[in-house]
Length: 262
Length: 288
Ligand SMILES: Nc1ncnc2c1ncn2[C@@H]1O[C@H](COP(=O)(O)OP(=O)(O)OP(=O)(O)O)[C@@H](O)[C@H]1O
Ligand SMILES: [Mg+2]
Image (cartoon, rainbow over all chains, first blue to last red; front, side, top):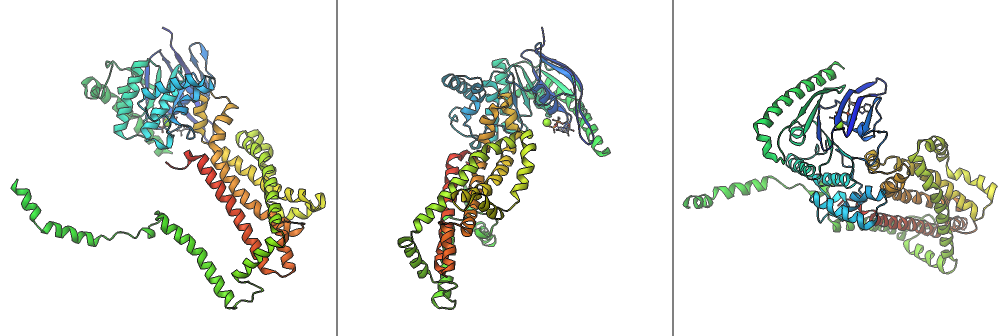
């Protein structure tokens, strides 16, 4: 089978007083319907990598393909969900979700139908006419996910979308996203520094080294679907968790050493 | 079942609690930094500041501690107001001043708004205009007045030019900053939802910056009221400033003071109306 997204020899240098090599020669493929989580210590270049796939940051060298088409710049075929709340505060929840559809020139009635279905999907029925500042953090991220999905992108890119949420809300949001993925069979690239989150969500986990970020390990997660939070106490889950925790620990220590040397 | 009862009957517990209550005094709420106070208290404090001014003023004038030539009594001011309106056609002066401010300010806004948005959005436009506009902004408008009189005379166009120059450059620069501060994540989100470079101006930059632009409009309009008076003081056939300078020539202090009060009231009305409109139109920007 042909990969959906091909990431080829990607490298990113941030130019400045001292150049920063943020991402170093990364290669991997994303297959259709895959849920890939990228796990890495803080500051290793995860966001940079995701933003390059999203077209918001230009790679210094290398290529990214969607199917056969090389990607340059952002476009509606790659939906993004950011960690910071990026909803449009002047639009109601409903209009936020319809934003991309309006860009496509879709008729009002059709837009409404789609936004209603996604509002239902993320469990926000009754909040259609609310404004973002009337919602809690978790609800805002539900809207952000719905907004990205409503546009029906080829791939969904999420950058620590639940990082700012409390642990209870976070768990609920993880289950929600997993549920959506199981139902809608989307292709997802999800970034996190949380080991449990990476295993729980991912069908494949890519572990990154500390900066400059490289792929250190590429692990398939064979835990069955549908998954609920109970899987987190499964011995197989715990075994992977121990292994990944060790890997991340090594890399985090390296990152700290790097800081200290400076 | 019996045991809890004895615990309740044990008087030492409530006693202890009561003592504790006395010791931890509640903080006086109006001494707590930034703590909200009741609407009633707020309003009565605001009103009493005006009353206090009125009391001090009356005390100084009715007792003739101060020469009425320097500071007339409140009653004198009311007399002035009546004569100004009934005999001296003060209403037309007020209208003249208001229309000058509005025409000049609207012109500045009509040209300044798009220019400010373009400067805040595109670096090429910023690089071209910003240095010149920043430079001109620090030249005092009042110093331009003699030049304008030389160029365009003392009629309406000159007054409007003063307001225009006084507001335009500040408007442009402040709007540009406001527009430039639109959060990058919002733009990025819009791009990933299929927005184009130009589409994003209408769908994201404008709505995001609009509440701030309204605030700027309110602020600069406030300044415009002071520029017009300066312009009218120097040379004008009509207007509040003209009445003030004429009254000075005739040593009618109470007319001057009434003129100043009218300017204050006009400015305040503008400010309050714009504030309310902004809050109504952009309620999403103001809390829950
Ligand atoms: N715009 C930029 N200019 C210069 N350096 C940058 C820029 N953005 C990121 N960096 C640097 O590149 C490295 C990787 O940053 P990035 O944000 O991709 O890491 P991350 O893994 O997402 O970190 P976090 O866990 O904090 O989200 C960091 O050292 C960061 O300081
Ligand atoms: Mg990051």
